[in-house]
Amino acid sequence: MSGGADMREPAAMRIRAPWPSGVLAALLFIGLLCYLAPLKPGVIALQFAWQPLTFGGIIHLWSEADLARYRSHLPLDCVLLLAYARFGWLLGTGTRVFTPLAPATQRLARLCLPAAALFDAAENAFHAWLTAAPRFDAPAAYLMSAGCSALKWVLLLGFGALVLIALARAED
Image 1: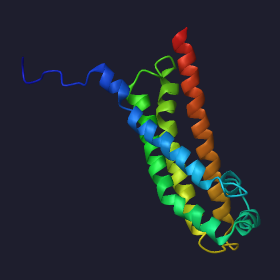
Image 2: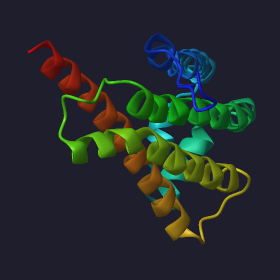
Image 3: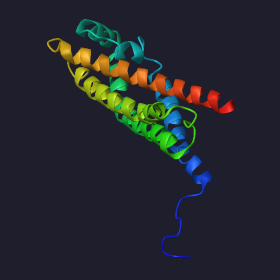
């Protein structure tokens, strides 16, 4: 055998590659969901608070302990977004899940979760800043934060839809 032997991983290894990051993302998501469950109104309401008074109104309904709970989850949420970004990229590049889709749609699927993670990271940065002190004089920050949240959710749900479509087409 020559020095240029085929060093590619077996197909079974490539197929499993996304699963550790996917399992980590799922466990972190469930853990954070449970950790943040006591917050009323919930985190989703805060994510879609487009205006300073709406955002501030939610924060003021929370106790200081609730606000501290919310702020303390942000670093772990960054680990979550890294895990789901890796999962999405590896599923799109290291498996055949998306092969039933058109090439352009395959590229879109491959980029959905990494792009969602970028918007999630921006949302986290906005939320860290906006929850540190009242910032009613910065309405654009609330708008950008909610916009990042909306784009994140569109990409997350879009990825899920593309997975389901690809799996349905694979069965045909």
